[in-house]
Image (cartoon, rainbow, N blue to C red):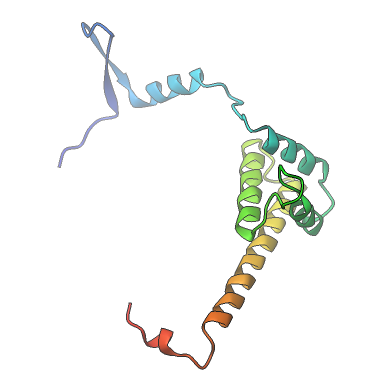
Length: 145
């Protein structure tokens, strides 16, 4: 087994000289070159601002708000499934955490809205399982994996 150190070799474009640079300093230098606030999705930014203004209204209000949003065509829901609701609430939670707001009331409310979406997903999956696998049919229990 070969154990490599945290140092990497860096060559110039001409390939003439090499320098030894630690991996940490290389990663740090790369992160300095990337703009800190590189969020390009204007729809998410708008949603984030709307949700920020809803702080203190409760998880149910936020959940209903997300369910009532319309897509680009103005007719279909923006988040038609529980998985889509969970994805957007998790994206908002990550953004709140990145902004250092994980102790805020809004974080708790969005986390609760995510829990409601998760509950809805579990309910629908349980209902569909009951519909397609009736209690009398035990063949699925006897099948070998």
